Image (cartoon, rainbow, N blue to C red; front, side, top):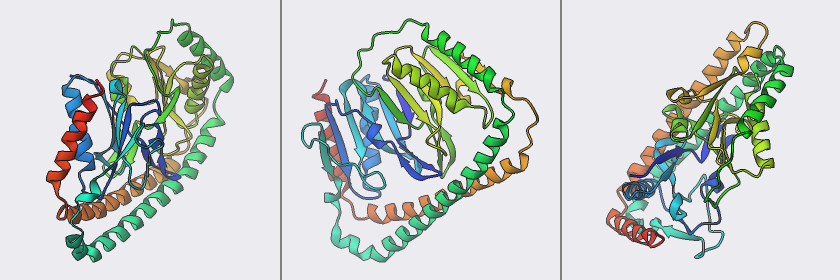
Length: 353
């Protein structure tokens, strides 16, 4: 049985839908299969089934979940075979960079009964309109939460001992990078950005524990808003890049310019703000120790939480509309033909062993 990692290639953020789909698999790959099709057209099920087949065959698999429905799959990577499969439809449109060489389109849309689908035109248009409206509301709520976050951040920052934090950062860098690095039999991204958490219709979903599992050295970075966690992680990331190490940066689900977790491959070390790390053996780096004063932003936090929750409720409305689209399309699709495509793809993937 192979190991499983779960991530989000995109997020519902304060700047709208934010995509790292280009980071699903590196260009130095054997093949990226790009699925094109329709809602309810079997893309997610196809990727999930092939991913599970790979796990049963002993391969490690990385599932890329959809932030607008965490039970749905946007991509799957079988790293040992350098194979990826992705959903290449909106809002994360992906097209081949080197068609036939490193990328191949798989058109599942060919299995739609177009004449039957035309009978549901008005239902499809209505569901699409509701879907767009719900997303607009969600992103406006998340956008509105950002200045509240900024106000809390500034208020707390004014009470921080950043001279002490700079000394701490230097000491942590010396400690982490004093380790002997391991040689990697690895071809891929030098720096890879993704999300391990997201705001979804099901609430806040965090898959960081699937990244942490199996890593040798783990650091939990504790600190309130404005204590400098993202800056701390950025400095360690910069040091890693300077030393020519491979790193994975997992960004904040609301403010994607901020960092929540950093994994340094050559040192097999992760530093994370996720509380999921507490299920493992870890070392704490506590930035709250450098906070001097009282927390006086209770009201702002309540407003912030309300806006985030309203955004999540709106995402639920978008998911409901999308589910109606899927229900319609499922009546018009030949799934037997899609199953044949799935088996054909699996045989092709095994040819790269």
